[in-house]
Image (cartoon, helix red, strand yellow):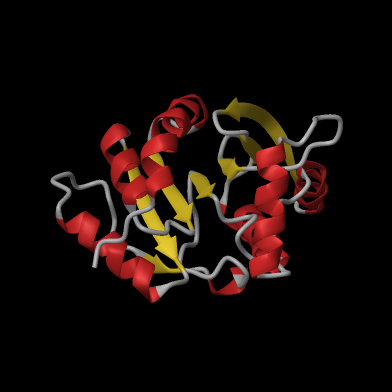
Length: 199
């Protein structure tokens, strides 16, 4: 029942270092597209003062998250919830103190990202509550690594609605929802973290 994503072991520490800088000291973190649940388990343990709410649109992923949660001795990792980012009006969460979304934007249709920002603008408070996005992105004025170009081509071959997104397109989308980028963090393996907050 437990699923495993090999990349989790490689990227969880660098992501955690960024989250330590960007997340609030307390409150509820809504994780969108939590996948296997390995990140949720790791981050809940790393940040015990935060309540971690994992979500995913896949029933298989929800089962995996629940299986990992069953082994977690702490009390700050909530039961996973079904959430489709592309349908923000149906999100089962009314408010959150932060949103974390890892490796979803490029492995989903653009509609999921549209819904992500629309939902974030509704559930996050003005000012400090961050929307934290991790993954590979294309940036204007920054050379795209060959590995990322190859990854983009492979994604589009699997599904023409997938692919690396332009960071500037996310900035423009954020602006449409009264949000703005507050930080950019370069991470290993040509990935970055983009942080947005309501203005």
